[in-house]
Image (cartoon, rainbow, N blue to C red; front, top):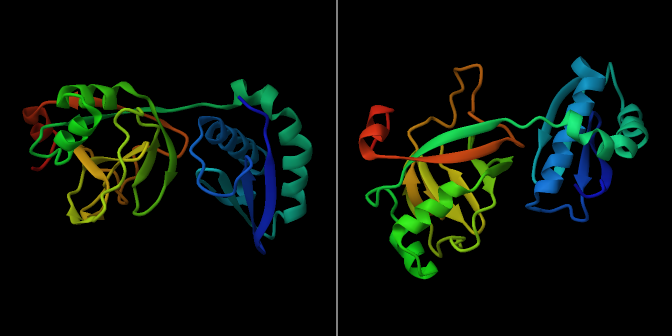
Length: 237
């Protein structure tokens, strides 16, 4: 893991943003994602109930705290004096990754862009499917819609740019690719990603204690299932 490089900025009277790496933009990096998870866990452990919310993204961590229990100075001091000097040494012991396996039906009736991706990559449809499910994907961010996880990185051979004209309606559960990221649409919505399959698992269930099957920093693996299994698991065509 590369050396930690963190910039801390004030976001509000009771929040800070920690930017990791050299850029404050969207950086798709396993190293940076792991660094964010390490710092997040250490802040949670140190301040516990004084922290209201920790929101990780591609290269940043938003820290919101109870101003009656904590202040900017204490968090800055902890991160710069306690976390960063020791983060590289403590990373193996601190970082715990959850692996989530998600089933996908890759049938061409639901994989609307499978054939085109295969043709562009000079592969068969089965090879595209094999490459997609062969990767371990890290959840880099959650956004666009509740339960929409940005997962990376897709094999370079099947990485495909977004559609020039987005679809007006992408079905719930659609598994798709955009550049070197992949995702599952948690609900029907407009979208410009390339659709390669469909997942029968709900990505957002606000009535349950665990509202999403994964969190930022988790590892996602896709498992190919057939049409009958997809339907038996509640999938809809």
